[in-house]
Image 1 (spheres, rainbow, N blue to C red):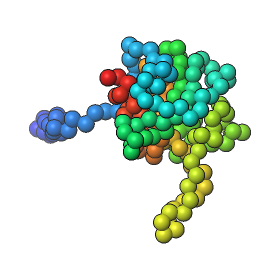
Image 2: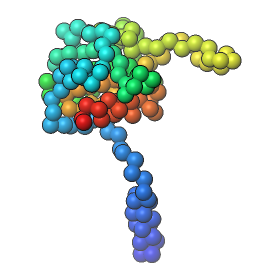
Image 3: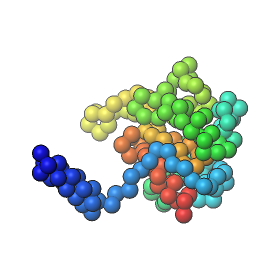
Image 4: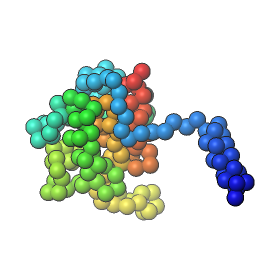
Length: 173
């Protein structure tokens, strides 16, 4: 029994340090910084639309736009700015969960915050050879909360968190 436990501990400790330095992408990350929408504009974030935040409790700004490290890698985002990290979590996380992922709420009659709901949809049609799906689908596969910012990020659930972190990494530098 002792040999089995020792082997298991050795196996797991080696597998954790097997040279895989892949960064763990967190959905919620605190920072000592407080960001404004101007911080994103200074990175080259381009605004399509600014939303009315009267019904978005605690938010100071909400913007739909795009950013990318180059003109060939641009993705769409919805940024929601709060006064603090705790407000972003307490007031913004539930709404971010509702607006992202494969089961995102895309009908205004069911949405908790209706502003910008049309921008959270993407239309799909038949792909090459007729194998695609048609209908309305969620644009934002995931979200991240970094400091006082809630960001909804374009892409399938599996890659959208990386899309969020591409922007967060740029903001952090």
